[in-house]
Image (tube, rainbow, N blue to C red; front, side, top):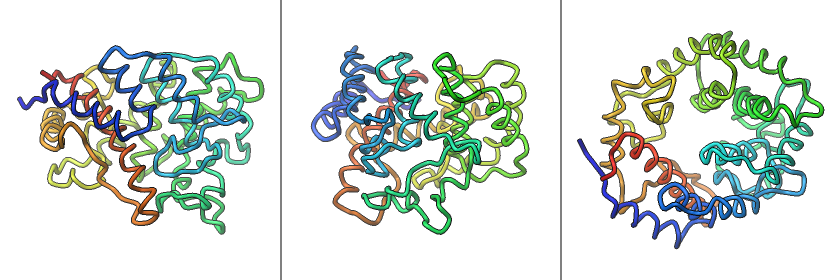
Length: 303
């Protein structure tokens, strides 16, 4: 069994502390060095705008300072990682989601058109003819995830009736004949964990089928941008662990093999805005490194 040692953790921390945004330093400290939750909350709040939404590069692939539904979901993912709630962050963000809900879509658009005026990856470019990005072609990313966030905080809702939206999201998933976006399924996986059992029962078969269709099991391709087993499931206690169980240890070995002085780097590039990409690349390295060490820890691969 291939392992990483504590020296790799220390190397990662030095890199993140010296190069990445403060948020990632504080997250690394909380996950691995008994750091301060308050530091994470303070750093996360720096990305939050007056309208309650998040922007300012919290999703490192677009540097739009304005709020977007997509970037705001990242803030809630971070809170979920910590298993913590912070009213000062959550309350205005829930209002932002309510204010940006598009009834004609029964959901949200990923980013506003202003994204084009700031450095961004090509897949985040807003098509002015289509009036959306290519990401918006997959409704569930991020609408299904946002619906589950609003269900989690349903006591704070003032405008949206959440139950019909859950039913719409479940119906959309179950009617799909083919699964083209792993990111849409990642959103549904996050949704699944927040919903009560009656909805989980309705969704489980479709999510299992989607994982089987989308997962890349050819390890020779894992160095490119493909959905690997541990992208879907990050621990043995996950309700969908059975779908990737046969490949989990192989994927852990791959993570151990591809670490570079404590760091994992993104396998993609913008091929534009090169100066800004270099900074986003560092922040992505921090995100990936924290996530991969958490996975390796969950599989007892850190010695």
